[in-house]
Length: 547
Image 1 (cartoon, helix red, strand yellow):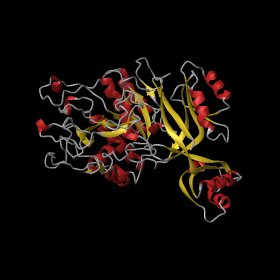
Image 2 (tube, one colour):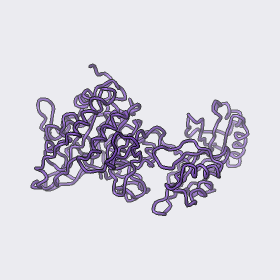
Image 3 (cartoon, rainbow, N blue to C red):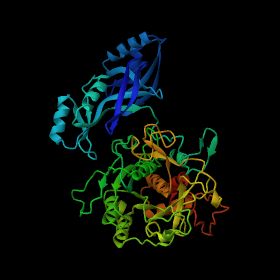
Image 4 (cartoon, helix red, strand yellow):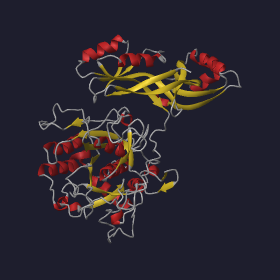
């Protein structure tokens, strides 16, 4: 069998590769735009003993992955018949991922990112040198292009990609490879989205009921702005065309009225937080982790300056003026150590600066054409009163606490009257507080690729490629989860005002831990707010909502 070692990235001059093996019985068939696949196959396979099965297809590209059920020699004959059909653009053998045995389509497209010191003319000359055609110039990545190969290049695309990658003026180059995965799937480890089995035998039923909500909506037509320390937009879960909108980097104070704003929100080393948060909210779910609202667009806003900086306020204005429906903020004042009740930080009251408050007021009044952006803040991880946090306790925002995989309060989660709701997240064992150990490691979500983030590229902390982490937790994870539910709500009822979304979340929450939750006559708990978010119930209520 013919084998290719495909380089999918280069990190610290080390190539990251995986092996593809050419199949002997699975074909890739690309039809012309209006051609009919069924009639073509009927004419190509004249022997009734030969059967075929469509494994999957890409409808908008009229491309099919087909298993031909006969001997290898006869498969070759069928392939020849198909290739000679005038309705067919291309017919070739598919490749199989050596690890999971899944068939993979190689398209006629390459992703190329040139070195930063090249001009646009330099890049285009190199593209012409290889007889490639520009399909898309990627606006949010410097010197980056999707290019198409000449027709019928076939598997020579792997050699061409490798040759381009070997150039000193090229940063990245790899073929566009399409895997067979149901779009927006929920990974088995994503217990916060659905009831699941962990450790092969332990059932965890402590989710926000997101899987059932996905039967109604996936968040299409909405935009979630995540304000955080940086974003790995090269991650496969954010690659979909149109997924990223209005990215920006507000690290630099002299941004005035946003003219000439830096549109690259890439993280610096150690800035792992934003990629994980964005994944919890709206990862596509095509490869390994679904967000709560996988079809929502992502507006990544890099704000890594200190609390109270002017860029903090500009972030909300940018989000509102560029079409964000929901804004997620997993940051705030420093917390005291959760296990030390005497930590002096517990008593520090951190007020929100006036210009940040005005920016938030602007977003809830002017955002969404006057209907208001829905703004979420993480409650905090200090096991301390939420009222000390002038950000999360602001009346215009939704403060989100963390509950765990046992439907109890996460031991570190902040509490108080300003708490609105809770969302599932990882927890910490605390036997001295009679708090049982969590069943799971944390939340499975996107990570900065290739061991540069939380995951070290092993099964304990994530996946072996380092693209996902299983140890994300805190109210930092709970906040974008709840924000994703708001996107689902607005997807089915975009006319809602921001305060109506807030009410829908309130009335659809599950009253978990009623024995210890201390819910008052209004259904509010200082530990859980109005309870754990129930995404399905929220979406159903949103569809029925009357002003």
